[in-house]
Length: 133
Image 1 (cartoon, helix red, strand yellow):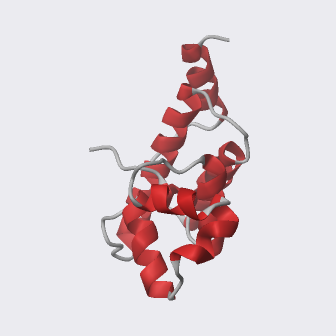
Image 2: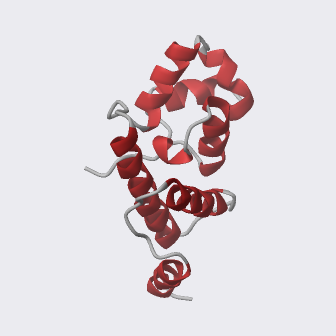
């Protein structure tokens, strides 16, 4: 299946629309979780995931102000606010070196790490996706 067909299929299965209710948020989050459960995503799936994450982010911004940070910067803030240390992330990142590399923006988060961080901090995995400028 070509890349464009994959993207069109994703759009057809769950057409992305601005989120206007908690039900729509839940449905969109379920779709995001389905994608994050996959071991590897093709570029079309990553693009679609970013789109869904943006829709969730925009909806959440209407509910309560959230600092305009994401990805690694958000992880650093969450660590500080929760009183956790870098070493507390070793179960997610497997080694102290990997934790350090991620926190110093030398290594990107993997889908598995995003899922585990979202579970640890009880927030949407979309919060760890990089924002498009």
